[in-house]
Image (cartoon, rainbow, N blue to C red; front, side, top):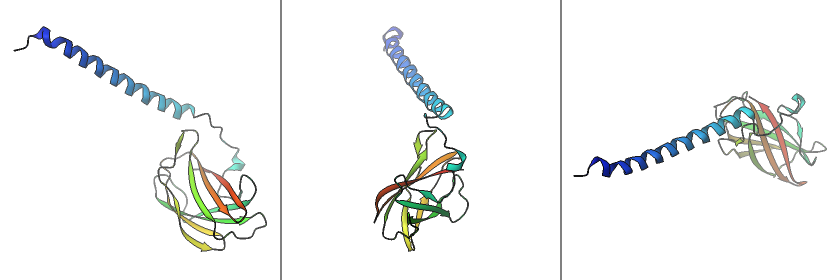
Length: 159
């Protein structure tokens, strides 16, 4: 049988390791909470930069407007229609759209991978799988690869 003194170093080592793991977990959690409270260095845009559009792309090639099937809400799977035109108002059909986004002040992206599921003509595309996991400021980015080249439209949304 093992005496108490022979087991003591093993118990001490386990206790130290457990303390280190707990300390690391608390530290990492505190850092993420502090980042969420203080923000990730992102500056909130002016109120005029928020909304469903129309919004002009970063390089001025496209104009896009979002039309959700119902008001955007956190914690709900949603479909959003986007209409894309060129800078003269002509519908852009046959474009490839890629969706991205996130919460700049929290440093995380969308919890889902939204994608175009239907091309409706007249520059309209349905995006399924849109979900925002919490309220606050979200960026919803639509990368467009069409006849005028590649560009990105960013929508600032308040949920």
